[in-house]
Image (cartoon, rainbow, N blue to C red; front, side):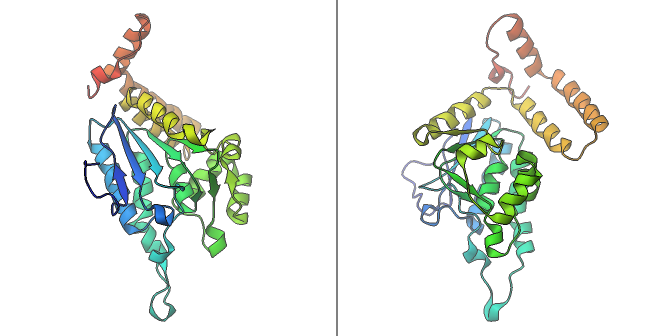
Length: 273
């Protein structure tokens, strides 16, 4: 953020890079950070900036105020004149779908700090990130069925792969909230932490990732993305190809040297090599 800038009207706040981490804060606290078109577009632009900026080695996403994200702003999906139905498929094509694709394909790790309720597309936005921490007071809610919609923002793809199909079906059809500690126990998120420790722990993890082998993290993300629809033989071949690519880079050379010399690896020294 620029010093002295008016941030009240900015749907996503971008903090200046610190230790290679770009922090993005959803900034519609009066609406529990519900995602309107402006917020989605701002978050997509921030993800694209992070991908293109070599100084950015990791991304941290959180929400302003008492909630993480209440999902899509229904004011953007209201009925038209005379009760005309909106084309929600088109709304996804132009908004949430490009955003989820950008987050999942970002060649850098994304840490999400869920500081409060995460509902609907807000819950699935969090789950689209790489490492998710949540305050113990936070809840996740697949709220879509309550208003006659199906889960979107990648929820039907990501959630069953995290918690299993039986639990995903129940969470989506019953639309009951699940607390952060239960979400962690089910494998939906990485960890539930005390509320007052959330941002400190999330930043520590983000900075640790930022100091790590960024290109390797990108390959890990690509390999995991491919595994969902791949056979074992195809995945073994992909691992071979990605391992060949990783082994040809200076990150690997530095990692091996550090191991043999019994010192911490300095991946930033070889960043971009």
